[in-house]
Image 1: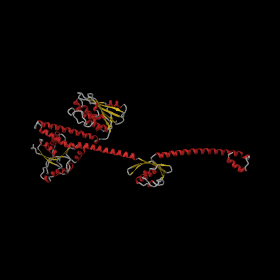
Image 2: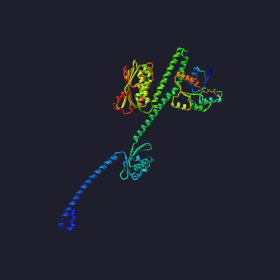
Image 3: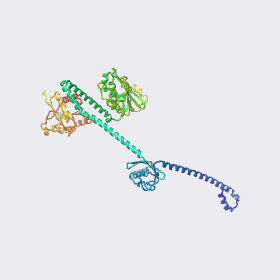
Length: 419
Length: 148
């Protein structure tokens, strides 16, 4: 019999072990209930023991986590009183002399710290959602504070120093700004130089031409030659300036990209090159050309330069130029292939450099700026440009452009038949 | 047919090289002409209004006006000429190096009679000057010289 039941029975039966018959069943039931209760309690105690040891374990892990992080953890109430903290980065709080527990974030010594933290606290209390802010102490040390609402109307504030990251970011932004400025200045310089050079050059050129007009064959043969050289020099300089100006204009006169049909672009380029094409007895063929996302004027210039080059650097009695288009991944790879003189693969990159000429002026005239303009245009469109060629084998200049809309599958045939 | 009169032309241009060049080109012209050049906008208006040292100026048949001038620039000169009743009928040909759309619109808004961009090439410049003379001094009918 359970000891508690026995003690009670003893009190009523004055030590007699005898339970009166009518109570027997009742006493047995009570005894069983006591035994059950005992059993339950033991189980409960055991499980409490277990969970408290788990809690201890978890607690010590959490403490280790807090220690492992450089962050400062603060538990605040709604009005900003610090209830508790882990980590002791007092510098992050502006080196307060008072103990942290019990003081208010609004009363922290530096305004650089107190103001942003108070504002963030108000925001998290108001919104009930995570708030992330950055603040700086004297633009020397940078911190990030994250505040999140926790149970019992409290707020957990986690402060981390981000000085290194921030300084790197600021340095990068500085560099980007510098680069942008110097780029802009260079652009401006190229534009102004070429623009303002035109004026005096016009004077030089006009008077040289006037000299030639009035005095040709009236001085001696030397004078005629000198004047001729001077006139040609001025002419060449004018071409250079015009080309330099159009090189600068790739950026300064840039227009936004829009879906541009290359077929229409090529149509109008061919119209403007009609005389040259007829004179050279050239044949121009093309694949169905796609719609690309581009600045139309610049593509006109691009095709104009590439097709003119294909005709210019061509000794074949029947120059042939083919304008190709194929899909390459998500982009279009466009090409201008000719049966011209070709070039040494060694120079494949050099031809795109500004003022780079592979031939003497009396072989093929030009300023050496056309392909540099092509490269600048393609690069402004986020594409690549290159050339595949060998001497006597013709050249294939290719470039990539983004489609004006997602190129539809099997659309090519339809386009080919439409044309 | 009346004997050909000498055409009076006022050239408003600050660059001496351009002034001389225009005069040289005019000299080659078949048409008898007399060019007076003034170097800035103030002087152009003095000349047209016969003020100061230009008290004896002859009213021009045609004005060739550059846009970028010291002191008063070509646009202001144009605006003033077209605001003065006795001067507004004189054809003003804007002859400048600018190709800017903005300049072109603005000068027509100010009632320029025509706008011409100076060609870089001498042969073309000669051709342009000849065309200006032909058109403004021979082809078009202008009111008789009256007033001034």
